[in-house]
Image 1 (cartoon, rainbow, N blue to C red):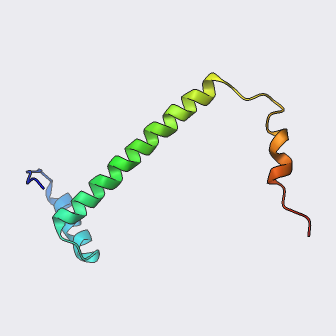
Image 2 (cartoon, rainbow, N blue to C red; image 1 turned 60 degrees about the vertical axis):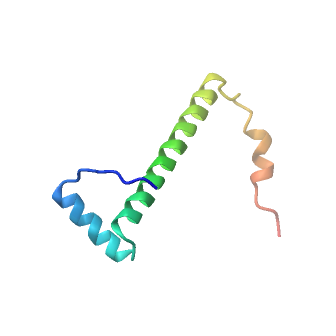
Image 3 (tube, helix red, strand yellow; image 1 turned 30 degrees about the vertical axis):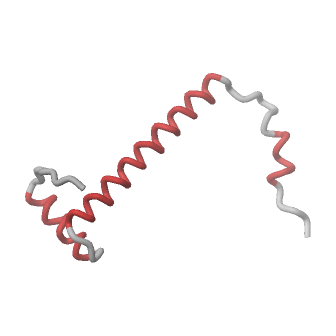
Amino acid sequence: METIQVVLDTKLLQATDRAALRTKRNRSALIRDALREHLRSLEIRALEERDSKGYAKQPRAQDESLVWEAEAAWPAE
């Protein structure tokens, strides 16, 4: 691991320390976990945007979803 310096305003630092106490982690662990989660969220957002653009390039046919309606129906009891 590497040590870095990060500047936080007072309110954010206090909120960080309170969250670290609540989650029984030290400040560094909390910040590492939060950063990992944020980076993963950015990655997911980028993939969703890529998929959205891909689907927009090939719009679905009007009757395309009809093929799958029977598959999505609940089975009769």
